[in-house]
Length: 325
Ligand code: BYC
Image (cartoon, rainbow, N blue to C red):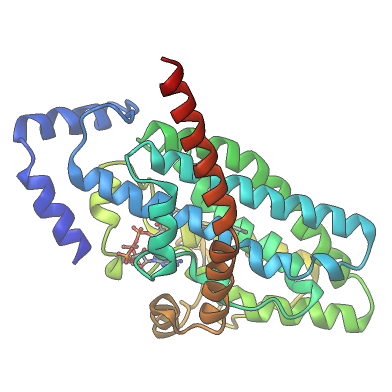
């Protein structure tokens, strides 16, 4: 539906301008906010960058939930720093989206009233401390797999935001792997917690890459515009290939009995997640959707006095400047 809208908007644009725009993309040039762009390109970027920004912000909730219960001071300091980084990532991305003429408030309102999405993964709970390791290792690991190619995305502000984000994400993944390794090498109760976390988060992590290529609505157009660099299935396969040896190194069981190295393909074969579950989660019916949106709504409402105060201050300042002129 959105793809059709994008397509019809794209064809409404002047064909000569469209061809020149596509030639710039094909030549690897970056598109900057003041450059001419098809309306569909702008809308797709606002949707993807906005959704990405919301994911960073909502993604603080499952991890933030464990800051007060981290097992040591060191783990607490690391987790606190990571959660703060996620807030920063959200801000870089909102800034990148704002360069296309949409305000942060508008984006937030679209999240709160359900017109915009955030990553499916954050609708799953973090039930034990090992989940925090698994989130850093698997969830940030999946995010990096998706985000490294996005450093080469065609829109300049998005590409530059991704370069900064990727630097921080690699620390996140490493701290996650270190935390889960400690659990996997610990007592049998700790090892059990690590296995339980991997069992519960493996398939939701695979879902982060989006639906399978045959069901992806936006990939073809987004890849032609270099908003996306790879298909969903390509990145998912790379993630599986990278992660299976790590699970084996940890001495944990693979959560999917069908995972097997395929010599001919040069990749691991694996089972897809349950796609009906994925579509339910992104429709709002996952285990934590209601809680996550309630938390964001509460933060928005609780922050109203700050926004009002700042606006009143800037109005007053403008009035004083006006009177002095
Ligand atoms: N969750 O046509 P498709 C993080 C939607 S956060 C929810 O393939 P597209 C982190 C999709 O929006 C990581 N919805 O879409 C933070 C579309 O629906 P609409 C966030 C999903 O856009 C804190 C429909 O399904 N990363 O790193 O071409 C702590 C059809 O899909 C999902 C990004 O956002 C999903 N997983 O491809 C730790 C990366 N997948 O919009 C970590 C940037 C699909 O038409 N985004 N949908 O209603 C992307 O690369 C792409 O947007 C996606 C989807 C690969 C996610």
